[in-house]
Image 1 (cartoon, rainbow, N blue to C red):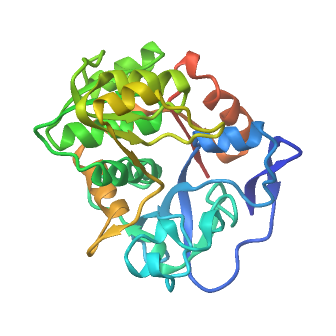
Image 2: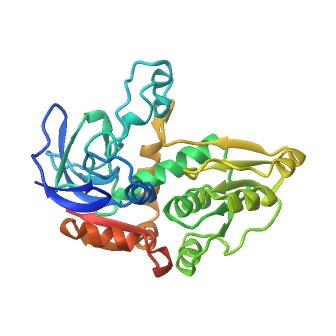
Image 3: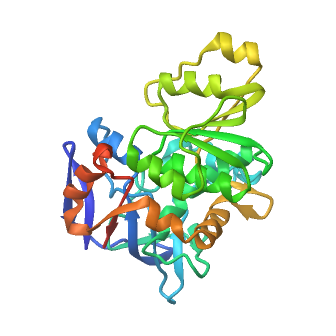
Length: 312
């Protein structure tokens, strides 16, 4: 079958053996290109597996599903507590980096990875469930309430997913973004184009030193800063202002479970109830064989790319 691989820092479509082993064979219908995919490809990270951790498709019985791309041990203390994103196996649990991912015609995953899709969330759009789950998880950890004033810094797909999740909860949201297409997308999802100071909760989805300085400035005294970005080059916070305001800093990584509810199932429900999400976030669709062009498009944020999707 065809699959997207990275050889020597270059994205290519290769012929590989179909997946084997125990689990459920899912026919992929959509696979999103994440900012972390772009970073790892351009940064020369060793990527010996098929790429793709944002994916959705159809199970053998015809059930439309998204896929939670984590393979935790299920036995360690954190896994048993529902925090399987913090499994002792660390980053090796992630499908698409340490295991073959969803930028392929098919994938075989354990049944527990399946996320049944409600009506209104078709598989061609449901690769968005994974980035939505990141936002849902982080906002849950930050204690989001509907009566709060929220700012989101960063208008990529994670920042816009945070806008969608926060506005769905009833919060008043302002968005700080670099590009006009991102600002327009935020407005379609219910955000004001510029956040105001005095926010109860500020979400950093940009991951830069300047963004963190802005985030602390936007926080009210006693407010909360949610770290939703990936800090590839380390983390530099404006310590004096942070401590002067006694801002609570909440880190977040991937997604997990609270009681019986998985963050990723909540995300699937959010996608189904917000039909404008897919048409707002998915700006480009490519067939699988055009993966190199799709990656180049995804890297060009100034040209209006937000979420670029491969459709095997």
